[in-house]
Image 1 (cartoon, one colour):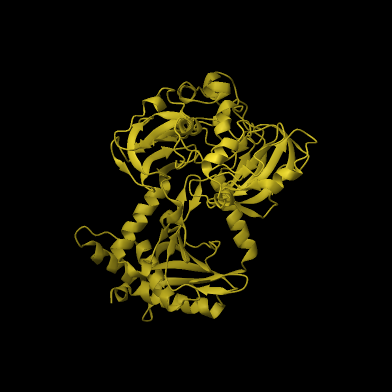
Image 2 (cartoon, rainbow, N blue to C red):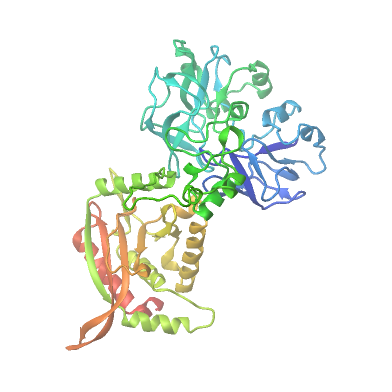
Length: 544
């Protein structure tokens, strides 16, 4: 039978999404895991994969169009299947409604409707809502409660931040879609649970919910029951709300105010992108959309205060500043680097390499047709080969063991407007210089366009950070955990050097290796740098 696929919530703050591109067209066969479309959210453009199999029967949102979360995106079913009944309600077809029209119990839930968690009794006290672990990223399978912003007994308003949830991508704020009193906390700070597991219970003050948590069943547990699905459906009450990451119920509640107390701005993805292009501070824009939401026309019609008050005298030396709320990426970077700096005992080894041979080698290599490599490519390849000879530098630290990696995956730090990301060149030691160059170029481009997938940023065993192109001569970096080391690469500088007892003009480059002393001793790091010097100063040896 036909499956209604709704606009997914691909970020914790996403209210609506724009279809950037369809990867399938009506009539195409769709397999589970196929990429259906690229969806532009308020954070990035993400690939949205199908959780169902069949034929794409209908597209509800065309490329460039925007719709709210949980609105009709597409319909997948059997070839030639009649879907006229599903389309009668227009674009706002909820997955639960679609299921009620058919009696087939084998419907596979799509991403917009995660399997609902259940309470064993199938009944909740009046006004009580079970809040489950939300799916805050498209790849999230479980989450960890980093911090609770509310405690049991606190009053919770719709839109209040309940907790900070650590996902597989970042630590995100999770806001409440309900109002009431926080009656129960299902996970303590630092504890983890699968998506849709019990997170909290909200309801009227003084309500006894002691039996609710005990009887609560996550979807994985519910699947183990032998009771047929049809019987569960028959017993389920129509008025037992359960909040999941898809938050179907939220579409029936008032939209939030445009700016919350913690500085988050409610804005459509298109308006946010236009504001970034025009350099407009969203906190200074008055929204004209529903409940004050900032939309496209607000950005197009925005007039800066400085222009509106032409002719007014502004005293010299007047204080002025702008508060910019920290993005989720910036928070995640801050948390990771702080943790690394204060948990790993860093020490640094600085060297200076002769780059004359490397310069000549690169010129000759790039003279080949359709070939272009950078000095950074040479460094990445040299590091990969040196790491194979010094596996302790290619290691990871755990509380009870040290892991020596036999594979070499090198992370390459890339600066983006929101911060820093580290895409990974996998099996770098097995790749040629042109292959490394192409991989780094592709990954850097994806990073700047916010197209990197989580898989492309995972699994590094060593990291290279290069600021030479910015004219930086020397710097140190913080280790990108769980790596044991990171190499900081400076600019190639022309200066007087001594060769064969004579002062001549030479080209040198300074590199600094930051090491975790728990895994890499000083002598080990020094030996790695000696091997690295041999490859960089004589790059032809990398071709042997």
